[in-house]
Length: 247
Image 1 (tube, rainbow, N blue to C red):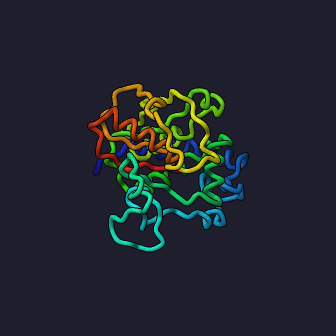
Image 2 (tube, rainbow, N blue to C red; image 1 turned 30 degrees about the vertical axis):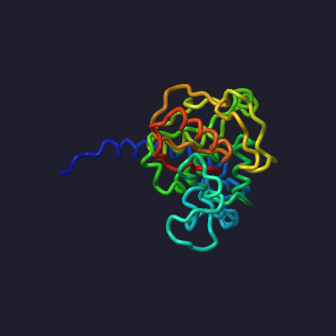
Image 3 (spheres, one colour; image 1 turned 90 degrees about the horizontal axis):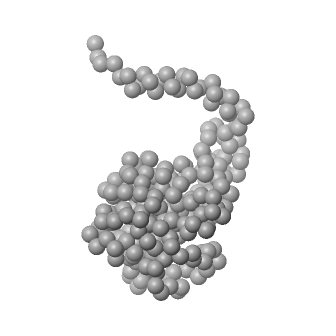
C-alpha cells in the first residue's frame, strides 16, 4: 500500500469546497475576454479574435535588446542599436509587440486599475525570459516616485513583478530601489538614446545593499537603463545579470 499524499487530499478537498462559490461567481461575473470583454470559457484569457492579434516576440531577435529580426541571421547576432549604443544591462526581453490587444491590456493595467490582468501578463513575461529567470537571485521592480504612486494608487511594475516572483519561486525585493526624484512621464517623449539625461544616479537610492544579480522587470527601457546603470555602479559584484522583462 502506497503512502497517502495528504497534500493532494487537502487540495482536492479545497477544490470541492470552493467549487459552488466559483460557480456562483461565474454567474455574477461571467468569464470574459481580458481585452475586449467578449464571453469566454474561462477567466484570465482572451477570446479567439484578440488572441489572434497578439504577436509574441519569438526568435530570431537581438540577443541584447530582444528586438525581432525579419529573418534568421545566425546565433548571437546583435541589432544596430545594441552595437551603436551598448546598454548598461546584459539582456532585455519583451513579451509581445505593443499593438492591438496587447496595447489594450497594458493600458488597462497601467491606467485603468486592471490588476486582474497582472497574473496573465506576468506569465507571458516569464515565458519571454527564455528560462533565464531561473538563474537570477531576485526580482526587482522599477519603482514609482511616491507622488506618482499616490496618484496611480499602485505600481504596475511591482504588481507584475509580484506574480513573476510567485510563478518562478524567486524572492521579490520591492523596496531595493527607491525613486528619489520625480521624472517627467515617458508618454510622448522621444526614445532613448536621443534624450539621454545627465546625472541619472541622483534619481535613485538603494534601500538595502544589493550585490546579487537581479531581474529588473516591468517598465520602459529608459528607466531600466537608469536602474541597471545605478545598480552596477553600487553593486560591482553583480556583473552577470539575467534578462530584463518588459511590457
